[in-house]
Image 1 (cartoon, rainbow, N blue to C red):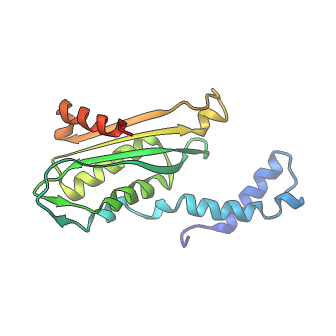
Image 2: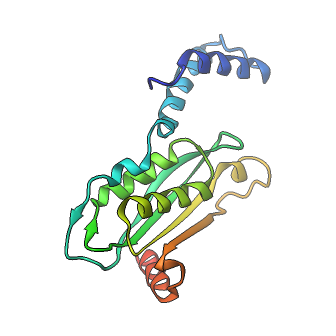
Image 3: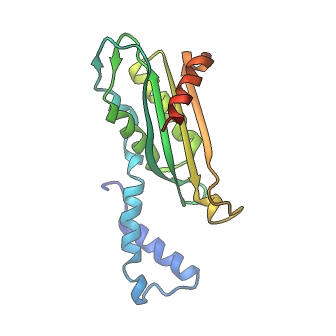
Length: 189
């Protein structure tokens, strides 16, 4: 929270409340600007973090087969409307020369990347590119499925609609059999 101006956010929230015709001094709204400023500091903490940092710690194992962590929940904020979108990330990679990372590091990279004003497409490619750069695996495949409140609460108003993005890097860009295998594992319950 060191780089976040909580007072500025509080003032902005008060101005928004006044602009929509609310009284920021009424009982139910008195502490809302303070709560929103703290929430934004938490929701945007990924702005000051780099997902690559999680892949600096590696282990050498005799493993060059698929590693998949699926159903990683995440929450983010649409940079176009500043409303939430949320869903699940599925992160797969094929280690090269036995270089693997801790499984929790994949989930931490998802969390860090999501915690900033964001686009789903960017989350997907940032995670894949970070793994490729830091671990140098044979390939990476990241699939994200999310529901966007900007489509649910406003505009087209279609609750339940999911957006799916996928990014393949390395050999997974061309190996359709491996990609299909990963997708079948993702769909397993």
